[in-house]
Image (cartoon, rainbow, N blue to C red):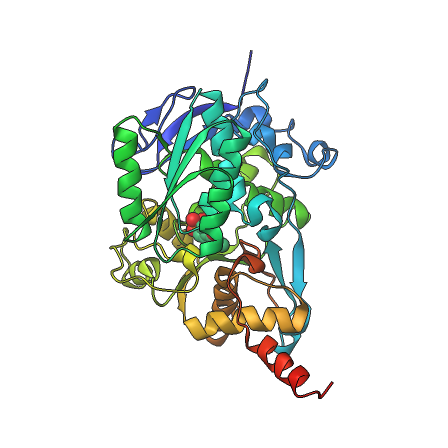
Length: 403
Ligand SMILES: *Cc1c(COP(=O)(O)O)cnc(C)c1O
């Protein structure tokens, strides 16, 4: 009896094949493993009509996800996230409304919920009792929540500059939180050492195969929401790149199943000027990205100096005819402010970076004003420290009795 449509896993660099039904981290080449499905068996079976009849949300895509039938997912309510037009802001730029896919609506306020719902579901299926990962914040909170939902112990190691709200949120779930003096890749090394010592299973981004499968749902969902057409360009805040890699994979699977044609959006990877290893590699034409030294940006979710899936990000950007762009801290802050002021949408700083990236792409002629553009906002804006200058002005007015 078929218990899932997974045929095997495959090393993303060498193509070496690994069996499904076993616990995996990286391939023998030290690179991410990708899950492969029997898409032929799903042609004419997983149809648009079948999908339309299902309740919205992550688990309607069950045939294209790795969890075997008979196993309930570990779920905290992974909603289908809305597509919101930045109507006024786009009009000011003389552009047709860009859309924001607002991933901040997911449990724990970020799209890390998608990846961890999937990875923890698989970990529970394999009997894992203890899990850990390095984080700049949102992955830690999502791990804390999903690990508890599955009855597992969770450990999180984060850099000292991780926003306090993420640290306290993670701790609130009863996770063990270590704040370390170093960047996320250095925290990742500690997690790896703990895993090698048998203390926990390593759930680092792309160092196990299933977080990417969860994040891939963004691409599946987007296609259906747009009436089975993909946008002209997708702007994505790129840290480890799981979401970008996942969506690129999702589009190939949708085509293989017969749900969409060969058209693809241009994938635009957005990074901050203070941490832009993918942009540097893309500009140089390199296949892999060197570590970025001295990484610093307020958009902590994309403060990732070194990514194990670097070549997969760069491949998707190149194959799609996209770009990799770095934006300034001022541009990020302006993006957050303007989307909130103009359209009532509070982006997270990474979302502000994406908006700044779209503005930069318009300026450089990389995208035109009448194209359909999708911006990803991957966390709720109110999870982050916000500027308080507006409040102080109000208080001054009150104390001066000018009301
Ligand atoms: C983790 C994170 C990112 C980066 O996501 P990747 O898919 O790992 O590149 C972007 N934005 C926010 C808010 C995040 O939490």
